[in-house]
Image 1: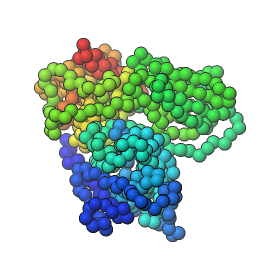
Image 2: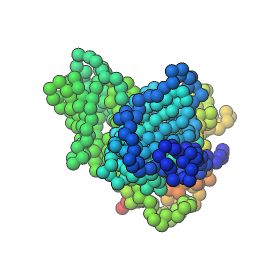
Image 3: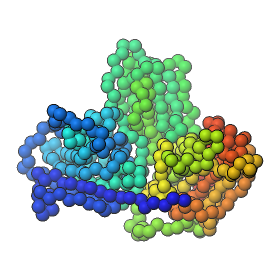
Image 4: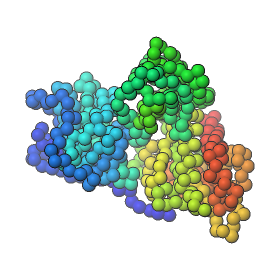
Length: 512
């Protein structure tokens, strides 16, 4: 087991031109705290500023930005923004009036090409949208402009910053939501250049990805516009210069799917697509993989409420035998934890790594759970190095309803005949044992794998989580037949379906 303290830090520098109430207007303040509010100032009698605050002021001799901090992505959360950077930047922030704007400059920070001059519609927290650009190259400055709604009282609220070194993320959160859990989602859409073509595109396929995205595919690049009918809860897309393929492929919507209906209509030379979600669910655009696809993320739009009497220290596993279900909408929040990652490859055999198998099974599992109506949070979605403590903290911050860690087993070469599935729960956790029992029985019934029973153990990720938690050893990579199964996408999906079905049965049983 590896243990490392989760590093948190903030470095904030205040713009001096608007008179911060910090004593000396020329002071620069650096913080090394877990979190710190970024002050904003109500501007009065200020000189009018240029309307385009993203226009670069770049030195003629621009420098190589290879030594700069790099802003790789910006992701919306349920209560703010999550920025992915390779280091903790110094932040300068200022408030402007007429029009109302908050300007956040990340010092010594370069913006990846795809994000430059992109925008993120917000329409919450008193923010209409956030615009992103490389404001300056020498020295590098990444600028975020928050276009504020002056009629919304939330537009006056200060924002809080928190940098999490373990995951290379900078969290920006309104101060009045600072205590609510932060739920990451996928990167914001990046505006692409207009597509110039006279030939209509053909909408050929709608499908769900392993991570719960709805993907709309065409036979050539497409342009589209979106809108939301808040009354009916329908997310609408209008794809210009397009038609519906006579061989259109559509996904099957399960009874438990958060999407109730998908309707395509040919309106003149455009295709209109209406996607109606269940109450408390929403559709968000995500970054396009290519110009022939439209990627939409289906996610819960609820914001969890933290009880006023919530203790600072979270409880250990609950041995009472009951599931503590927060007062939230939706079927529940499941944290899916693919074991190992990065240089920690886990079990190996003949060049096959445990970290790769666990990630594939976890992606299948998350997508299936989302289609069932659960909200899913992954501890990792790529091949990154992640210690044990941050995995637990992700689940605790999200106040998850269950934690499922996916692993692959191994023995030495002299025991290659051993095979089978083992499912672990924390010692003394009756509710964890119940979750393990439901999941384990479904895996054995679905895959036909050898039954190596459910067991209590002290593994860190299940012993330190406060919600029902299990660790599934999906098979032995050192057994030739089982290794072949574990690397098969069909078997990986069957394993994921069984785990998801067991989780669903567990929650249904505890809701009765």
